[in-house]
Length: 269
Ligand SMILES: NC(=O)c1ccc[n+]([C@@H]2O[C@H](COP(=O)([O-])OP(=O)(O)OC[C@H]3O[C@@H](n4cnc5c(N)ncnc54)[C@H](OP(=O)(O)O)[C@@H]3O)[C@@H](O)[C@H]2O)c1
Image (cartoon, rainbow, N blue to C red; front, top):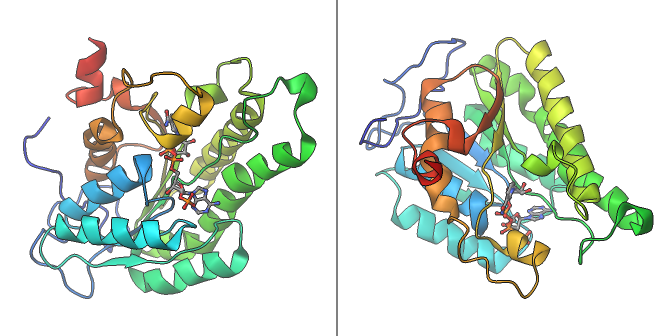
């Protein structure tokens, strides 16, 4: 694993090879690639957006809470590579008008879509036998329908730009943990939609990225009142995520802990 942060490698060309010359930090131009990161006001999305900005990516980020998003955008700008732009677009990914705003803000430079925003669903986590169906549907709207809609919206530009889509998934998509039925079923559906997309789209990389347990608000909501300070911070998986992007690894499912040389991998040795 390199010591330097990886450079943007999803250049404005239709190629399957890494393009490490694209958009070096400090050399941003109107043609530099841009990433859209949903749910970037806190937690994993905030960490991934920060890592991308430090590596020289221009960003469009969203979240529903306007003030929290604005503060996160400023903090990301403060630590970004020179010349990087960070545009905050508050809104709900389930709202088609908001998705249109994201698309407009990104323009033709969109080369990476990071579908990170998600919901745990009903809390406290209910058994399937009692799962409130309205909240079950809501979990699918946020965790499946909206990421698919965003992929459909951005695909024309991602194809042109030799771009990529990252959907954030979870081991709850593959393991039947009690109480995690709404979230897990939605993540499983998202994973299959992403896998099919990967099979269909030859010009675009489609990665499913499982970060592992992280110390975030969502994780705390799943374990109310419990001390989750033993879970790693979201920043620990940023090197694994950046490696996916910079090396343009094949489409597929990746666990942060299995990408060697990363902090997350070191933690499980
Ligand atoms: N934490 C873990 O242990 C873990 C493990 C595996 C996978 N994941 C996945 O990682 C992703 C991020 O989780 P996290 O733990 O970082 O969660 P988090 O701390 O709750 O952060 C979620 C982010 O998404 C935004 N968001 C939520 N719903 C949204 C919506 N409908 N539209 C737009 N933005 C929305 C939130 O801001 P607003 O509330 O202001 O909208 C916030 O910025 C999720 O997909 C989650 O399933 C997390």
